[in-house]
Image (tube, rainbow, N blue to C red; front, side, top):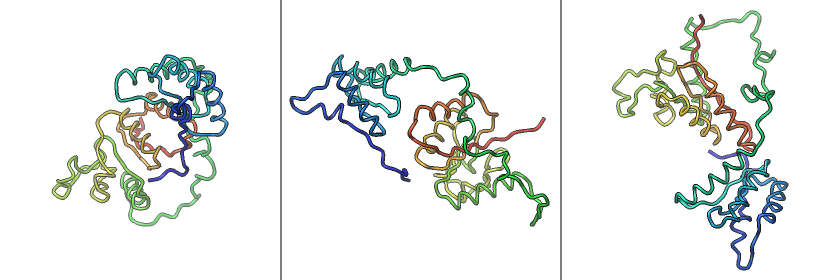
Length: 258
């Protein structure tokens, strides 16, 4: 899977400063960072926070003041480095203004597609063909058709697989979810594209966000009703990723009319 454009990670403020006889103070780094932001680079490597107090402060200021570009820093795989980078980023995050109350509903639904528009109207007198079947069978058929059409689509969630262990797929009838919505999909498309998740909605959503970021099509599944926590995970990622662009994020769940 590939992204639809090249992402630029600029290391001028960290790697460039390593040239012999060359040094940047915090103010110089801020000026360069602002120019890199204007150039439209995707990520700025601000420095090496653990190397000195001055570089720590420079990284913190850049993370606080640069809004239109991602900011990262170098850290070795040791606790001291990681703590320094996290502390610099945390200070910058805490200093940012809280979102306006009127944006609370932003990004919950698509800003471009209105499911109540005429584009989604059904015909006045639909002509049905074939044998009558259930909604569950139709959802299963739609998932099967789309997975056959697009190899990027994967399905995971609570009890969606036919079997937890792929080696017994040929020996068992298969489960395919509590309501059989995903029955047979694992057998048809393999355990790499259809598999069970832990009973943890935040984990399901987190994995789906990661897959969507890399242009997969992840219809994750959960048996429980929607919660603000799961919505907030997606909203937070959308707000923080800024230049990542739009990614489809389907989520399948059951609703019961009272």
